[in-house]
Image 1: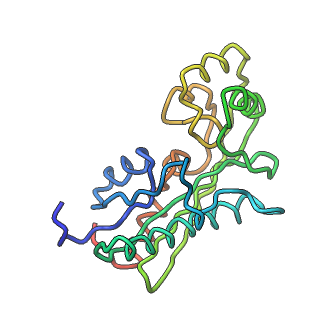
Image 2: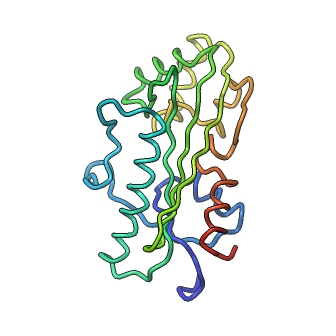
Length: 205
C-alpha cells in the first residue's frame, strides 16, 4: 500500500478484525500496542467499580482509538483516522471477559450453556478533530453443552484469548442455536456500524 493512499489505522492486534476490514476493501495499516507483558497504561481494560457492560465496552473502544491517535504523533506517522473496537459479553448484566486459564474458560462455558447472552462490540473512529462511536448489541443463544464437549473445546486452545471463552467463527459455532443481531459484531467488528462511521467522516472505500 502506498503511504500516499488514503487509509486508516486499525488499533487492534486482532486477525479477525483485519480480515473483516479486508472483506469490505478498506485500506488500513495495523497500529500495534504493546504485548500483554508491557501494558499500555492509558488503555486499561480493567472493569471499573460499578461499570455496566455498555459503559465498559464504549470506554475501552474510545481509549483504544484515542490512544492509537496519540501514538501516531509519538511515532512520527502520517496522520490518518484511527479505528478501534472492543468486544465483551454480558450475562445477566454481568461482564464476561477473557478467561484467565483453561479452568476459567470451562467455568465460563458452563455458565453460557443452554442460555442466551449478549455480545456487545463498540466501534470508535478518531480523526483528531472528532471522535465518533457506534455500538452493536447481539443476542446469542447457546444450546446445552455437556462437560465432555466443553473440555474438548477448551483443550483446542481456541477459547483462551476470546471474550466469553469462545469464537463464533471457529469450532464454537456448533454451540450456537440462534443469533439476533450482527454476526460480524459477534466476531469482533460490526461492519454495518463501521461502514457508517467511515461514511460519516467522508472516508473513501
